Length: 226
Image 1 (cartoon, rainbow, N blue to C red):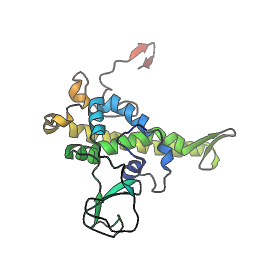
Image 2 (image 1 turned 180 degrees about the horizontal axis):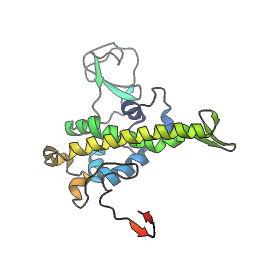
Image 3 (image 1 turned 135 degrees about the vertical axis):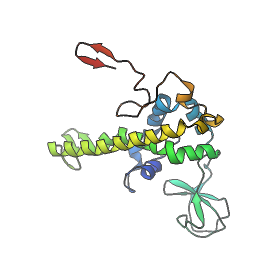
Image 4 (image 1 turned 45 degrees about the horizontal axis):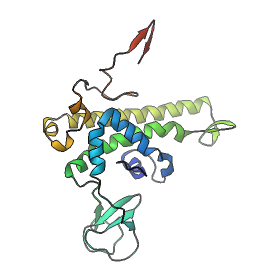
């Protein structure tokens, strides 16, 4: 199985998805994340972050027993690490903390505060039409009912909200990465806007990320393509 930065639990953590959401809905997560990394983030930086992920393959689901400091367990789709010797469950904040995702504190801060939310909203926005609508041999259904005009309006309203939040997450991420301090950080040198100086930064929208001002559409009559 190919390894990316996001997990289904991150969609729950960073977006309004319900806690009981079926993680299989995001089984295409790697493909979505990789495509976005190449297009908007920079494959060099993304590959460096993937290589820096901490290996928790030996961690096992939590069971009631005593844990030593530093022990990691699987808990609710993620990993928790014991801060003290404890027999408490991993939701006890004084004894447990979120296990670091990366060996680098720089990558940890970048992902948890900026990149993680953006990628989570990208994944949600791409899967949303399939979440809200089911296509069957009897037609299209929404929420267990036949697809109708009222449902279309509700779907569009939800989609607009998700795309709005995705755009905002991109703006926050881009502003963070374009600071002078981060430009000088060697660990972040693979960011696409650092590498490709021909790309003009701009706000993320429904179809593009920072490339939008750099693209030159082809005009054919009254229609615009590209």
